[in-house]
Length: 532
Image 1 (cartoon, helix red, strand yellow):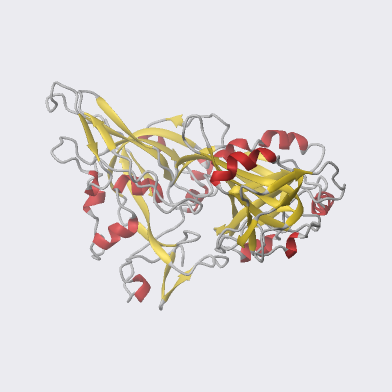
Image 2: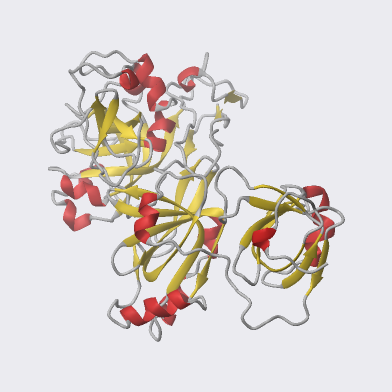
């Protein structure tokens, strides 16, 4: 049987025979020891540059995986053809191949020199903007490498993950691409910066999704995505020739890898009156929460896509980012606390700083997502729920930063990136034997029934668009060891998104006094003068 082009392959039968290059391997293993390969899929690319996703079912992985090497060219015969996945398709093909026990795989000894190398369909930046919120198919993006952030740790629904932001440009627009987890750990920017001294570095990212943040194009590399450096494509040559040396050398943004936040005190931070001078700095401080900042609301109505402030507008919402295609909104935390040094001499003046908790950080402190707390809260102007009030007086080890948006405010404020709750246990209140108290995360407010320690909080981190809907930290239990020591409970929660160089605290809120639309009857937020 002669080999058939992939564009003619359909579900009519399963006797197809194709010549393809096997690219873009994706593997996932179990947590067993030793690990066992539980998922294997890749892209088949033929001589006509047509691509189709191929999946090997788990029960045939051991038999079929060893026959394939990434970038090899093979003759493959006998496979099922079924409909492509409904969402996040890696390539633009209505069908996908499913291997069976009887699938034959034979490597070609002679490969034509013009056989395509990359399974991609490069999408212009303006089209990527139009695809914001589109879930049916992932995109492929190419741009000149301009800068890269240092690796940071961020909270996601799958726990704490590494994050790197890679900046690229097509000459007319810029994009920031987020690499998470293993992708972030594999991306080595330093050799690329050295390479750029002799030739412009063009990056091709395949398998990305689009969004916008504060009007900027932002991309997320999916778990099945990958990237290529200066791929042998005509588009690469065009980009390099159009820029030459005019773009300058790529550079690092953010702090040095491995650098630690500066240890300081509230008294020292309170003396900072110009946020421009400390923009991007990170600090570690032991502080006590005093109260909410006066006349500041603890939540705002946010677009579910760009997370920027919105407000009811008839039966829909009015969005302030013209590039955003969002159609709905949810409450989101933005809690501004006043914090003080935990121990101050009685005759000394009390110094305070303003710290702001967003999304996942606030979720972890409160123990409830913002929409749940809104449904319990009163609509009275200035009402502060008990779930927030009981944090007053709590002692924390804070990691703080000064994001870009802080310079837009009239006063210096610090964003909480992560925190550790410090719980002091009284000696006389403890039994002689060591006792372990486990509080499941579904205990309301995280309170310990019958315990002498108040304000224990369960972890409930915020969402990440590329991960499952159930928070991986939701089920974590809070452990307190009832011994006469100072116990720290770690809440390594930070605001998810595209990283510290993109975070923005400029999402002011106020309570509405107008009739709310049906979609927002339970939401008590609008925008403030800055957004007006």
